[in-house]
Image (cartoon, rainbow over all chains, first blue to last red; front, side, top):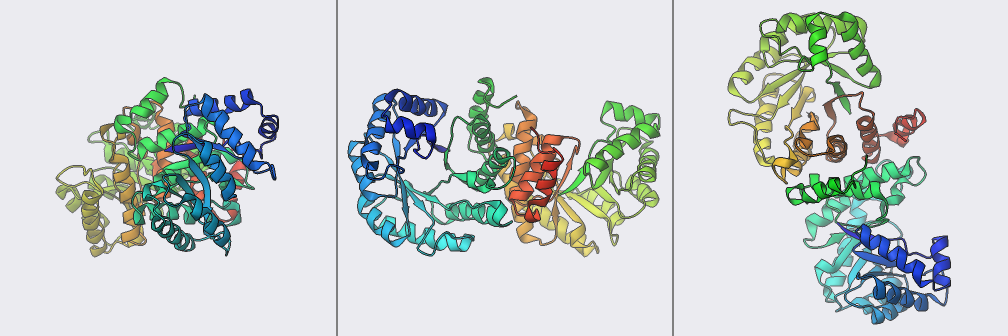
Length: 265
Length: 265
């Protein structure tokens, strides 16, 4: 499982203040904590700062990478912000995100074409957010073909089928999960990714439901997630599910986690 | 999820003593506790008492059914024991189990043919226990066809693909899970069932791994289980997984469980 640590996001009050104050120490701490907990990429998002987003995102990338040895996931709907931030990024960044919405698609394609960036592609079009597997697959197909045609390596595509709350419809969980399975079946080498906490919107015991949904998604092939790597129960859920799904040779990652006390009481 | 409560089994020391002493009060208590916790069937097994098995199993069926309004799952490899116990059983029993091992198959077919018993059929043959999905499906196919040919309703067949320890091979979990999925895809109306604790044999944090594997199996379509219904964390795992898998209309079972404090801390 490739993990994108989601905590450096200006929509979180404390982080918003730390970004506004350019508080290096605090930002580095959040980045380091996530890296040590297992994040493969550190998401950086300053979308709330209208007009100053590019400046802040560049500062975040530099601040994170000067102190923690990890690539960033540059998180913005604005292609100019991505373009600026990539210039100061060391190594290969991830970008979050392109979608099939026409304006966003056209602008983002020109930023990512021919690059070796890792690209999160949302299954969303001008018609809005799809609810069924079939509607998602139609969008996924156009995204994968469009990106490959623009010289993006298929292994750098991370499709996000977009989780919708189970409270809005009994079938929404399985439609999402079956999309994950079908993507891996149809497009060898493509990754799937999501931020899955939306599944439990409006119901109680959200973390409990989120952990179960992560286990279900891994069963269907999910191989990447945008999440809080400091959430120990979620990390334990990933470790056990990957072991049971045959992605942990000789159960060695599971055994190490057990010895380090990471599997809970 | 149809739940077969597994606790009245003479291989458990305390229960063995209660059966030997024909301690009605104790046996009824174990049956009632399981029924109240959600068991749809009460498994009765006295296999350890050689020569007296039929007598004890009949006593168990009668003792359970005189006090708790629930069918039993008559659990014996001996067709004579099943035959005897069925005679004293009220309503429709489950039987555990037939397999494709020639002697057992021939003897059990004559007991179950043309009945409306619910039949657990193990994916095991004279060649032993299969390890792959394909080997299991070959056996499953013969079992389903053989039973249907002998006038067993397809909806009364409960196929058990037999869980094997993940510690014995990284792929054994997915081979089992993919069998569950394929069975539901190939044979509409057939049920799948298992006792899944074997998955965690030899590794630490067994209950944690068992809960995750239950969630994974439900994701693939598992609709019945032989288990301890007094295991609250396992029951909570089933409730959340069924809700997320679209088997809980309006999340109402999940919401009720939450209000009753059944989803844990």
